Length: 243
Image (cartoon, rainbow, N blue to C red):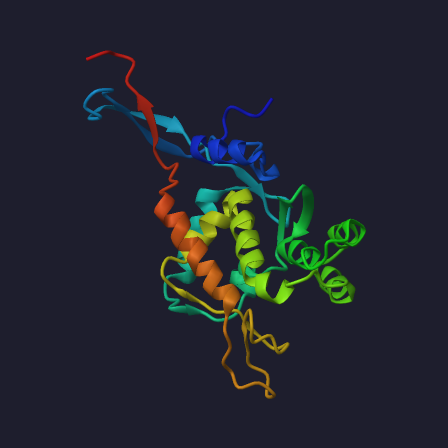
């Protein structure tokens, strides 16, 4: 049975897709947030209650359990003067396809988006499973170079990347919150390995301009997430009294 303390909106969305991220198994319970009790007919706020935070706890690399609320606060402090993110490293490594982000796609679990993307290059189930089990995203990328490409791959790779980026941030709520904190900042996948399709290479051999498809997809997914208005800061509790 799934934990009843999961954030309501995130839980419902993941139930529809049949996926629940590991990081959502335990909620915070430390911070105090407001819950608004509304009248069923008028939707007016009749009462404000204080409840324990129900955001998920996520384990950091050092093993420390953090509430996504704390992570957001740290991110805001670190990024408040940023107008453009032009490299997915350091504080912004979570935007990279190499970042640890366990996700399910097409019935198979991947450790990173990079592995999931490389696996979609082929229709061979054995090759896909080999890539899914790769010990690192770099190894998954190398394995992807060796597969027999499926027909029409070049014309579908942007759409595949778009689907995978959406799933990454849907199935990893902490990363979704961190993406939203970047607000309207331009996202550019700057690199030095001559990828001017999904990013912008700045090595001496390249012109310093590129199509930046990964950055553009991230900004679209960010806008979609913001438009959904999935905000669990306040839990709306329907009134138990009839008007």
